Length: 86
Length: 273
Length: 131
Image (cartoon, rainbow over all chains, first blue to last red; front, side):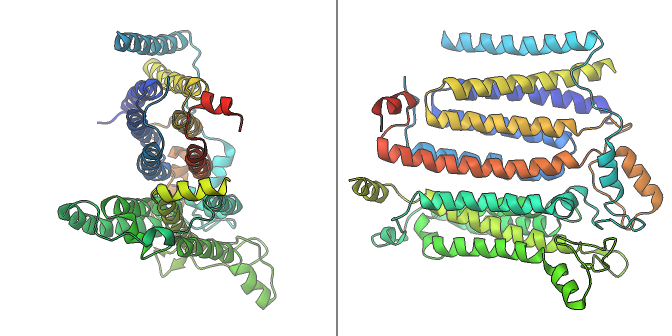
């Protein structure tokens, strides 16, 4: 039986895990790994959008942020430099 | 050594977050708690979204799509124009470079192996079907114009990676894609005037972006057929045109960003002199 | 009610920590591509907090703002008004996501052009070149 506390517990867990992913995305010096961490953080945000009862935004956010942003940033890295300078 | 320092900083941040949350809750004040009743404006929207006893109803069971295309339709028209301006800006940065320069020496035999190409051909049809279903059901279930367009735009990206970019440039050029994108924007701007034109022919009053019957003008696009088949009035036209426009806008941008680099550098450096 | 307060506060404070980390990434990291990634994270977190304001604690469970029975009778509409979440922030966030996508797309094209002309994407080296 799904009570209301399960929603709040999943929201808190997803928010804390997205903070972990953001920290690693900002600190990392290899830019390809930073783009993959950014995609991981976007999927945790998509879970929070679903738990907040917003299905329209969930359907917009998943192809835009996990699919198109990540692909465009990876093509951008291929055309410029891969490692962040000193 | 460095990884231990990173783990320590991360653990400190998480412990500060949890301890502050408990301190806020135990003291009786909370940072923000979700209320039990929504605002009056939200009650008006939820009451009049599919209500045949009120005369400002939008006649669509989905409240978010009705707000986006009927109650606040002008916002969405200008949001689509902002996306179009971004495409124009990206095209301006690469003037003097046409994709005809790249085709002269390239062949179509490239890309990944045969297994990947066959599976891509099957998945392409499935992605397009799912995207069209999301777009055309936008007035009944969660979905709509931009959602369907963004889902369909994943398919040419997969095509460019598994086949080569010359496979797509030979079939759709950048100019044709931008032309189709402008045609979609034109259909959106035109279908906001439909009821106004019909009413002016018959000599009555109507408003721009009118979908259903309003207080002084009894003209509307039909939203019901028979007893329980909901079409949604102008929402269906808007959703279909927006999907078409977004998909072709993304095709133009993806072709522009994946053309190879040597020719760009030659043309830009020699125009810098 | 105590457990619900603690869990919701954890979620809100973790999102505020995300905003702080993303702004740190925009200000201090020297690579243009890293600045673009951090700006994306910042704008997504702000959109999430706007949708968080529209949530509603309805007993026994809240419902997304979509009517299920067609055509509805009057009791359906009254039950719907007492259980559904707010639909207005979701419509505004849809517009905000599209405009954010357009701006970041243009920034990506500008970064490629800077690399073609100057040969580097490091902000400190570009500042020394002086055009």
